[in-house]
Image 1: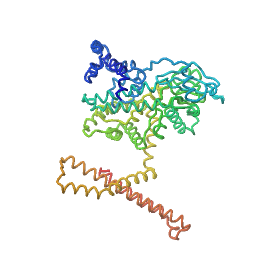
Image 2: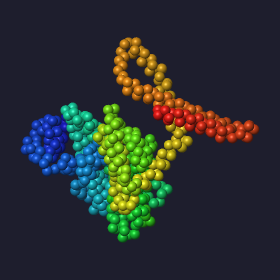
Image 3: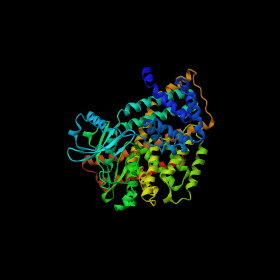
Image 4: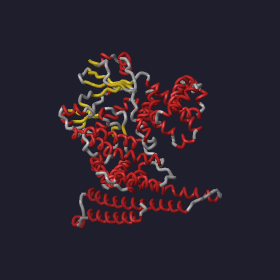
Length: 560
């Protein structure tokens, strides 16, 4: 480990030097690294001078770009986190650009032949030496397979993995050191954030993972001829090479060309919005970067998505919360918006609920006179994440990717046709998701889930009581509960008992009804009474009435 650190000592110096150069030398000084790595004091002084000419966000963007691919990618990923990064810094992070040179065709050929274990000539009939595009992690070339299909081949930059791993290791070392010396680093969970960003970056380094993402999204649209996802050629794909179908169309950022070739940009925009919301709210797995350069228009108003390195995942439970949020936003209901955001994130125990309501209410007032068709759901979501940031509510990563996706989507659609309302298109999806909650199958699954959970609690209850009395007998029990805490505990117990009653009654009647149906089916006959009376319908009616009565009493109590 020590040898590894010594080997990377020059990179440590580069990072500390660049931090200091752009006015963040005070952090390095607190960590004791300026003297340890012999950084010239004039750099510290020059760095402080830049404070007068550049904003904090600008200086952060500049030093990330100077430090190269790892830091640029981390900055780009961090730009999806408005819940943990102030808006003025986010504004600069979205401007981050890959400043990379092309790597030679000899390197391309060497990597291809190593990865495919065959010569370039035995794998492709044609291979363009000039890349179509280049980025910090890799570059893309067009080629033709032996079978005649035209493909796009993405090749990972030479030695990029070792460069990135070295930088990530140094970053993690620095955050561990900072955590032990600087109070606010631990308070704002900087180490956790760095680890999370590192994980996302490592996922992007695996091209097989990107290929799987593409195939998963392709399955979502296998019955929709108007949405096309390029095919992955797995026999020519490895962790460092991704070979996909070549998409020859017009990118959505080429507006003039779209008009010249007769595309209806409003239709294209609506298709993009519908496709993204289908991914988000129906399947829960979505393209994380739908900017115009990643979407192509094909003949007959077909749209094709490309570049699946960044994706988001939303659980069924979280999709329901998002649906609630969309409807609450539409209704401009502050209480419901707060309820949705607290359901989505990890709310700290010391959150000021009154102030949180006030901040959301202020946000609601901002949109109260804005016509529904003109509301920006992407901006609203990100402003809501800013509220979360102020109250230290940590939003799950995939939800922040969702916020960035919606903001990017609105930018894409705005360029195509400014009359399209993202929120108007999202509303039917939100309503459908809310209605899905009350489908019999989903209600039964919810009931069984709660029944199993509370069953486990009841099963462990005797042991818990035994342990509790044992501690009491030994005189080691210390209890300090204030009146508000007692009320909170009682409310939680009431909620548990009500939910348990709800689950047991629902499950019991479900079992009875299923028993009647199965019994009649197995016997192959029914009694005269059963033939004459609609027993199942009556049973279902009784079950429904009791279920609704129980649900009404619990909801009325406000403790469900």
